[in-house]
Image (cartoon, rainbow, N blue to C red; front, side, top):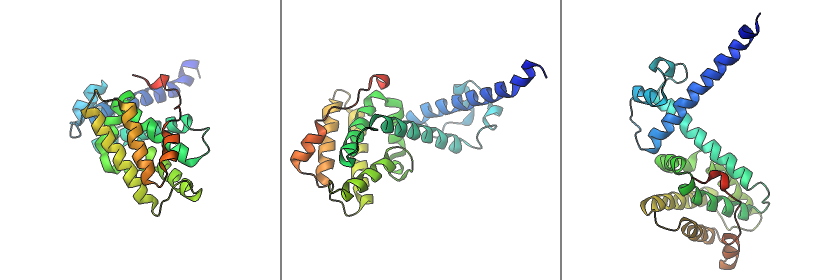
Length: 215
């Protein structure tokens, strides 16, 4: 078998991966723009692929959009894990991730609009921030850092505040996103049972550098 023949399956697989990636990128743009009912033909045109190629990867627009959202959530979750890997205190880790997510609204606008588009569904997802936040809430409560009777209610309160924060920052582009995010984080931390002194210590901590996600 020639080298060209030996390499052809790899080339085919790479082409399939590029096609799938192009479809997902196009879908993410449509979701961020709120065009959830866009025809499949329009999506494939935006991805610059043939309509027939779509069905080699997805059975429906809904399946594609679900994959596009999942990729955003997984990507953000992995980024948060990387940025907070050295934090051992679950309350500090929760606060740091929360403050980072608030800043992502301006630094990752397309991804953030996708998350806002799925709204409350985000809070029950097993990907992205929600499962990490719930684990931190439970761990912080067990460590005596939070006072929480029901982690699901605590997550709903924190998540609802984050979604509201995102809407506010997009509606008021001149608003200071860092200060507003820290103010919301402080309110959430007090709701979770922390004292004002404890809250101030957490929201005033330096955050990890974010040069690689700046717009």
